[in-house]
Amino acid sequence: MEKLGVAVCGLGWWGKTIVPLIKGSSKLRVVRTADPDPAAGAFAEKEKLPFTQQFEDALKDPQVQGVVLCTPHTLHTEQIVRAANAKKHVFCEKPLSLSRADVLRAVEACNRNKVALAVGHEKRFEPPVQELMRMAKAGELGTLLQIEANFVQDKFLSLPADNWRLSGREAPAGPMTATGVHLLDLSVGLLGPAARVFASVRQLGSQLTNGDTLGILVSFKSGANALLSAILATPFDGRLALYGNKGWAEVRDKAHPEAPLGWVLTKTLKGKEKQSVDYPPATAVLANLEAFADAAAGRAPYPVPQAQMIANVSALEAIFRSAASGKVEPVEG
Ligand SMILES: NC(=O)c1ccc[n+]([C@@H]2O[C@H](COP(=O)([O-])OP(=O)(O)OC[C@H]3O[C@@H](n4cnc5c(N)ncnc54)[C@H](O)[C@@H]3O)[C@@H](O)[C@H]2O)c1
Image (tube, rainbow, N blue to C red; front, side, top):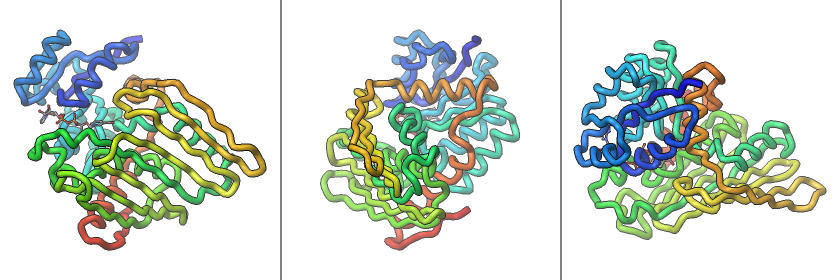
């Protein structure tokens, strides 16, 4: 199998996490790196990879068949469109875009240029989450009623105050683009498109002036709800629980996706004993990148449908509006 040649653009925290993961892949290989910060060149040199400060160089390189965007959020849409227009397949870190208008533009550019589009929501590739999604789809939990989920971490407490990840422009609604958007993606994957949202964000337990504590109620078109919690002032915790009228299932994470330690899947089906299963660590981030490579090569469709990518960003935009207005906001689309 020929490996997909990719350029990793953005060599910060996540780009530096992704490059070594790809080294262990039989489906893709890094052929170039790009970052405007010259200091990132030292990492590329250590990894023996070509480095450029210009994103455009990656698009001109015929060895580059796809880009992996690990860049600041406000750059995503434009970089997706430029890469697609250069006929490069696109894997973009979350959030794909910050508004519905932008995600529609990104999806349109990829479809018009017949290139694959994938997004860094690796939680979808965690084996116990896949099992929970299978149970939901197979009807084992009955009618889906409600989700309770959280993703909290304290990794940003050490960032300098002027870091882009702490700015209201790059990260509206405090923790939303860091962790909450993963939970929103899973909720959309399980419950379909959202109808309206209410979000409240506050600075309560840290120096993060953009807000460290976010609570969200998402009401879906199906009538089901998701109660989502994202906090940036507490040590790591992660949980996804789905309740139906025939039973419930919950995935608890043992560690952050950066260094997975495994999961526990607990379920109770009506009339049966509660069961817990331990899942060993798995590299969900790499599994997502490999699904991207499969889609780029035409071996299999990317498992996250574009309609769900659009529904996720549409709800995300409504959450930004609600966090700012303090009101319930409708979701477009
Ligand atoms: N999937 C996950 O679990 C996960 C985890 C962490 C970060 N992320 C995502 O990864 C992305 C990057 O976040 P991060 O924490 O690594 O940020 P970071 O600040 O550590 O790194 C971003 C890098 O992008 C570079 N950059 C800026 N403009 C660029 C351009 N035009 N072209 C190429 N590079 C450019 C910066 O110089 C920096 O090195 C974000 O979308 C973030 O949400 C995802």
